[in-house]
Amino acid sequence: MESLIVELQRDATEPSVSVLNLLRKALVVARKLRIQEFKKWIELELNGYYDWEKVPQYRFISGSLKAWNPCRGWIPVVATGAKDLELLEIISNAAIGQPISELQGLVTSTESRRRLHIAISGEMQSYLMRSANAKFEVVIHTDSSQVYGILEAVKDIVLNWSLQLEEDGIIGEGMTFSKKEKEVATSITYNIESFINQNSQHIQNIDSVRFFMSETFNNDQRGAHFTNFANKNQDNARQQAIVHNYAAEAQITREKVLAWLEQIGNLIREEELPKDAQEEATTYLEDTKKAIEREEPKKKLALANLESLEETLEKASKTVDAGQTLWSKVGPIILKVGAWLSSTVV
Image 1 (cartoon, rainbow, N blue to C red):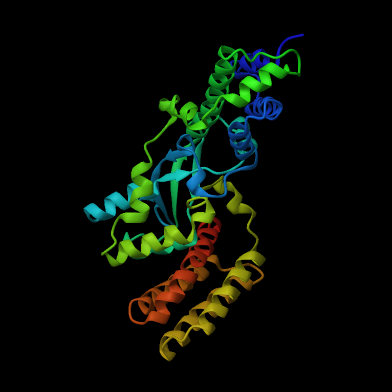
Image 2: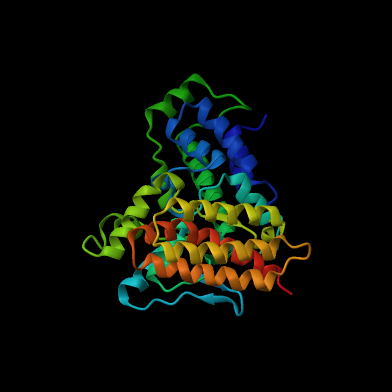
């Protein structure tokens, strides 16, 4: 009967074997040999990373920041200064925390060079709108080959680990290991970081990203806002970086959009805006809703009113604290509504 370690090596070098099945087999080995560090790593790969500090380097991918302009389509986000340029470079490197099954499905269900969009959080959207002159929804543009690189990195780690086990005299017979092999395995420290570092071709240097998050712009108001954002969202897997296909936008219903507009209305009423700004914003909001609620929605009219609403709230954000707070909440919602209206205007 073939040993489990040899099976692991063969599966890691066989293109037809999925990374998901490879990891499941590796989990069997780690648990039988009581190698806790690899067990924890495998479980994170299978279940996903929900703390961005724990996301390994090979799971960071890079892309270009682009904003959706209803009239011109996707346009690049351009930095206006050295600090903004550095900031945009940091944001465009995203940690992919999804379970390996989702990444595998994403790659196998699409063509190998398909363009992908990585969403960034609502607060980051608001920050970019204020600090980088991005007036539209911003996403990271990349392609599926980078996700494929994550899968290949995982296979290499499992392969090198299994080869090291064999070199240490741990082979096994069938699905079992001898008492001596288990004792050898527990006496050796298998450091997952050392195996990750062997795969330098899949690794981006993100030490500067982590340092930048916590140390940079301490004396700069815009930078402090960014640092606070990063600290606040650590449990969101560094922007959470949700990989998705924007074709899904077509699945958003009119009812969903109206619910978003209702949410904006509630937020406007909750904040203490100047009376004239509140009344003006409410008027544009109601006109937007009426245009969408028609039996045959007037989408161009709705988009025009939405843009006026956006201008009113953005102006208020620059004059009163309440306006700034409100803008940070409603800005991302307005972007979603605008993207839906723009994708459906004919």
